[in-house]
Image 1 (cartoon, rainbow, N blue to C red):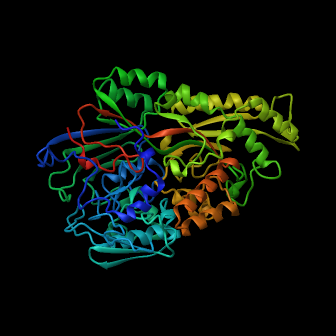
Image 2: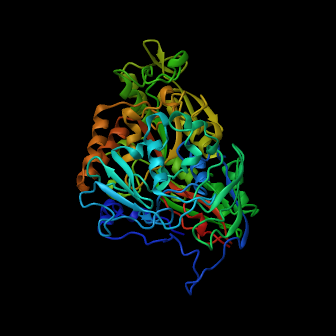
Image 3: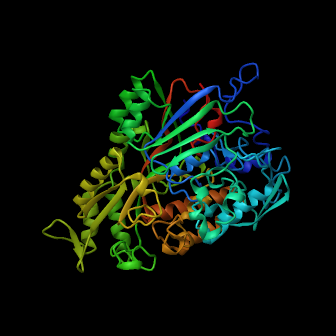
Length: 588
């Protein structure tokens, strides 16, 4: 079991050093699951029966560019693949469409970091038997980059000047300026390649209505057999998959629903499933399950996942079509006292109790201080004292000194505005316990807190008023994560990425945060090539979000916190990509 390998890599090792050495080999795989000691195949395609996967958050769509949650992105990854994946060492690996990982050393990356040439594996086919060509890569990029599409992966296209097909098997990506993060587009969950025939009549704003969103044709090891959104996906083998010995399992049952605790019991106690995702279960319940199990084991690794609270800068209660729009302003998180109120909320946030009692003090998480974590060279220390100053009484005094006086109802108010919060998150026992801890301490400081819980299938959509994208509450809480280079991730808090009605609430800036200084950091980051200067910009962007209390990190979580059957082999967790990034290597 690998716990912290991904944390040990430096930023330069992640990206810039890759320019000097070939990373990945043609057809390479992140695990040795498909090879025996003698170099021959350990299994043949279809040797196994059904693989049972349980996600307590059920997938609702299978187009990764319309996905609003990990459950959608992961469910699509069995079918729709990027050019390459992020491996366990935070470096790209050629286990998908690309023949090899382009570098300066092998001529795939230009010395000035402006062009990246991707070569596709030879004789690659879609699951329907038709040929995969470079034109499909170009088509996919064009759709993602089109603002009308409102793709959830659009930020990875920022700064890309063009993507063209040099020939049928060669794609040339050109950045508008030198970009040391040259794997920005093409690698990982951002960049699943779509079959043009399925989406040709559903481009731009029409993509959200494409039937293929529920039944995509891809290059992955499996094809969709049946899909009931919000319930279950069944898959069968892709008989045109490029590796003739893979996948091992004939079928996959990707079941959604239930809760994290029942998922843990299904893998550790009853053995009803082979893989149970995201075991966000209180440590006092999870630890005995793991230690006493002969049926399953924990698959865990740290990466960049942070359980965080988001502050809403728009008015979630504005009337009519103005509700949640960036043109409105939150009544007490903005204005002259906005920063004071936000800082008081942060000071009354008890990270340590949550980490120790609910996440096992390192078992599945530790107290969080930054939104950028996982690569030590990029982790800020400027936020440490700010995050460590938990004191609800001092938070109350801060508010009192600013004129927010405590009423007879124990709620602070000023100029007729009361500090009344609605706090939304998904239905999950650990998250409800976290809410309870927060509510107790925030109310000691003089806030009134109403707790809301939304089923994950509703919370992680862009269609529901109760969803994270709309953010029609005062604060909300969930986890997500970044690539090893967090440029595109940080872009999700820039002004141009604000989620609103005009872009179908699809873009990443749910907070509706708009700050010229922060936008400037990201603009500079896209142009800066010096590793040390890039690290400084990343820390400055992180500090802007933390010290201005745009977000309140609570716990740095293990990126993968899943249970796997003791009989399943070949699964190597990565802290930087989908948990399904190499499912073709799994076997029994």
